[in-house]
Image (cartoon, rainbow, N blue to C red; front, side):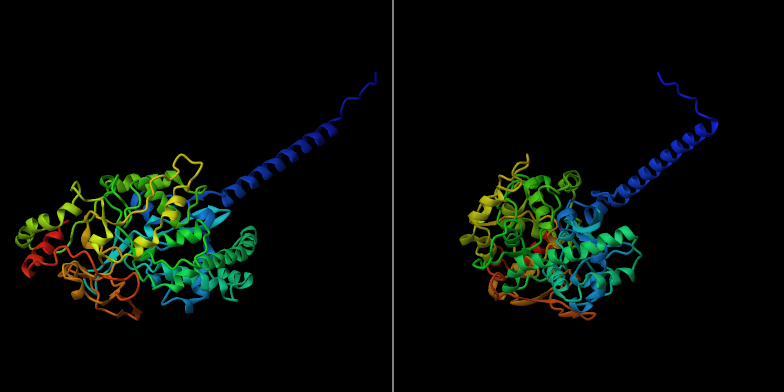
Length: 484
């Protein structure tokens, strides 16, 4: 057996120093790994304690699959201002609040780098002004009355196809706003061409919208983009028009079991919410159920804001029985026909939105979220439009499903006496007629959208209920409806 000589004190010290060096290297590597995980955590959303802030700015899971890297989103208006109708994203009707980094309806989630996606607030937050000199009042839950979502899609596509959308040019624009570290800069150089390709692909799939009447502010074609984006159907031979107004989203608990969406194609509030989330850019694998559920629970009992202007109580009292006789059976919570569908041959309104939603689409939608416990099962094709409750009706102008009638007073007139052309996108409130002022073509250099009721999908005919009342009765019922 070989004898080993004991280590000298020098050798012992050298080994001890070697162990310390190894430990230090391990600690450094762990620290670097921890920093990289913290800095580039692949799924870290920005959260908000206040529920209304969460509704306006919190993530529902749209960023991983369809979000835009934060700094690319921020610099596109800098690089391509000529592709916008005015200054920045606000010129497309997005609401920008003081002190906020992004417009209402945009959320941030760290997906290697921060990415920007859409959430519920983008379509369901609007503004109201008492007069032209008033500051806008931001109201959560009302339809996004100034949002031009179609033009936002067009802007993203126009930027992506522009030959100036290069890695070097975008990085130069970013450098003018912030300093990226070497790792993040490398990631952005990789992400820029991928983002460009994704935006071009999205633009190609949605190019069919350019062959239909413009949506204008406060409107969206809900289900035709589903066909192109969710199911990758060719729209070459589909010329249907599904353009309709954004709905309000308050008071959801009593809506459970009603026929929802404009055509009543679903009776589940939960499915309706998850369907809307898909429209905002989530996918079955990225949907953030916990954060979406937080919004859903809040909206169950979130009330519409009360009418803030003066009401002639005596006149409203005269309108109460008139409303109950002519309107309540279809539009009051708990009434016999509320939340049911009135056939198109009876309601007589524009049929395009109804026709755009097909049996084939309903069957395919019921395959959404396959493999998950919340797979869709309630989508159905109907034969008309649903009778909606009228809570907060003062904030839901213009009226009818396609927003073709500017005020409630106009809706009480026969179709031939309703405005054939008017302007949308102005948020000054018309207290006399209940709606938004619709005879203003421009303000401060911004041109409002001219709505033409003669175009396909834009008809203002139908819903003739109350049109035979006397002028005095119409004034009374109108005053009463301010209180709903």
